[in-house]
Image (cartoon, rainbow, N blue to C red; front, side, top):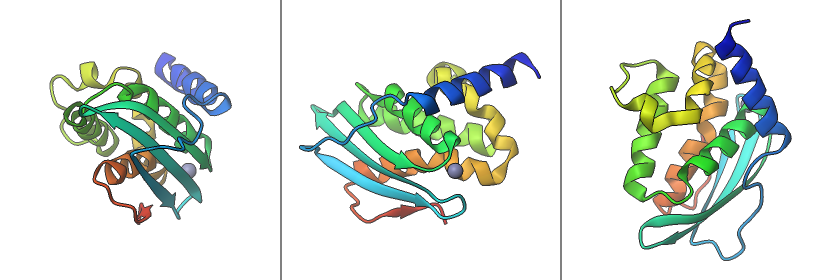
Length: 150
Ligand code: ZN
C-alpha cells in the first residue's frame, strides 16, 4: 500500500468512526436532503448563514464509510466559509473526482480533501463522495427538494 492509500484509509476510517458536525441544527437557515440510490446513502444537511458566511453546519447520514467521511470532511472544510469560497471548493472537489484538468491552486483549495483522490478510480464510489457536496449546493440554493445522484 502506498503512503497516500494508507493515509486515505486512515482518514476515511477515522472520520467514519467519529464524524465531525454530526448533528441536526434546529433553527437552520437552509437544509436539504440527499440520496444516492447506487449505494443507499442518505444525508440530511442543515446550515446557518450570517453575513454570507456559513456559521454553522451539521449533518446526519446513513450509508457507507466514504459518504460519511466525505460529509464529515466537507462540513469541517466549509464551516466559516463564504458562499463564493464554498463554490470554489465544490468546483475543485468535482475536478478531483472527475479527474478533469486540475486548477493550479486546487491543492491549496482542497487541503485535507485531497486524500479522497483515490475514490476517483471507482466511478460508483464517486457518487458516495460527491453526495454531501450536491446536497450542500442544493441547500445553499434554497432548494428544498431531495437531491439524487441519479
Ligand atoms: Zn456509498
